[in-house]
Length: 132
View (tube, one colour):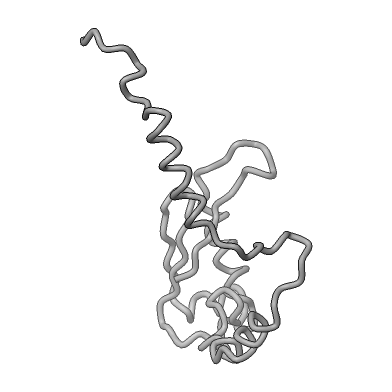
């Protein structure tokens, strides 16, 4: 430990004035937007001109497809909570739940039937599906 006072770490008043002058010199003169202000028209033009705005997703999310629409032979759903993975063949899933059943509902039922995270509270019970 040293005998130096804590003030040795502070800049001198002259150094602080010099730093403040540099900051004042670098501050932009334009006023920023307030939360209630309208955005400039250039912003909206750039946003509307962006080609990504017209893009449509390549395919619907795996959870929203019906079993008859899924091309994979093996269906896999994992739990984000307990890291469990459940696999089922598409033919078996269609036989058990029907070909028009949503994969999201089928996956949730598969996880719930074998869930290990039971707390007794409805809000916390069950697994959190991640469709692969």
